[in-house]
Image (cartoon, rainbow, N blue to C red):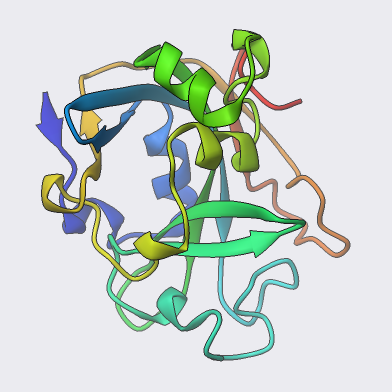
Length: 189
């Protein structure tokens, strides 16, 4: 088990999004530990990407995308928090949205956090994932690390994945930038 460091995220967001598949999202809440295997991601770039929060330039609500890779970037869509990790090469802009995880540990706590009893509907979308893991605006701008109670582990899991266009965007790049694990029941679509 290796905790991902900042250097992992100092690369092209597409590569980071692909390589996050199979990694374990860990969230500690008091004495409780929640874990989920990342099974769906989307890569976002800077002003050249019409679906990106960075498209209209650096603003107060998106400034984290310009900051150091490995930081958490949280924003709200339809009353749901979106959990992103800043990822880009030096001098560039970007982030990776974590769209879904396969719950592994702390499932009962995740269900309480979400107010649901159906495990299949627990973390199969970015808003559901954020609620289940209690990830909100307070994490915005913080680094992924055990000290901030949210981090990602590499346990050496390699999975087969596919790609598609990103979900819910009006204008997309030609390149497919959504990545998901094949045949995992927690992929959002």
